[in-house]
Length: 183
Image 1 (tube, rainbow, N blue to C red):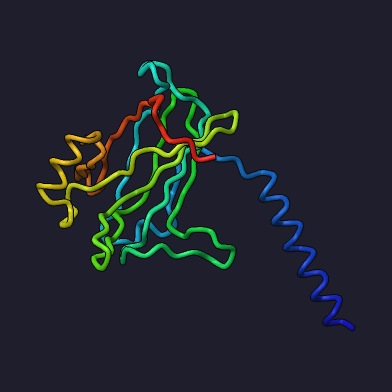
Image 2 (image 1 turned 180 degrees about the vertical axis):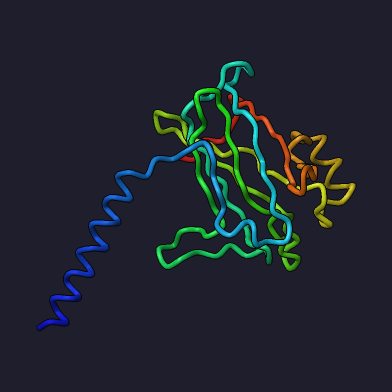
């Protein structure tokens, strides 16, 4: 009987603490991919997200990044949530900051090192942003770079800069009217 009561108290404690955490958890303008600092190439990406006019900041927009792990695999937890993911909400000036790492590529399928981004508007619309690529990716050949420059935005190829022993990259986005709606 004592063990049943103990079990009940433990379950009750975790239920209440999870409820309190869920109520008090507010998304900030900084997103952190779990264990990013333990990876081979951690970095900080930051910048501003603008509305389609290129001037007005996209304030209070939710931004989510998804990426493969360092081996090029997309792993999920027991709830089918991607492990290498993070979300944030832009601040009043449209600013954002992610702490993440350069993902691996899957050479079996000729996959580039990519970060996938999704932006959700305050009214609920969700849009896929162009994927982010990496200048240091050995799979990103000259031919690939030429095709990207011809067909899309070559600025999506990120070049990490080492400043004070930290890899960083600044990347601003404009929410163009031709983004693919995903909901």
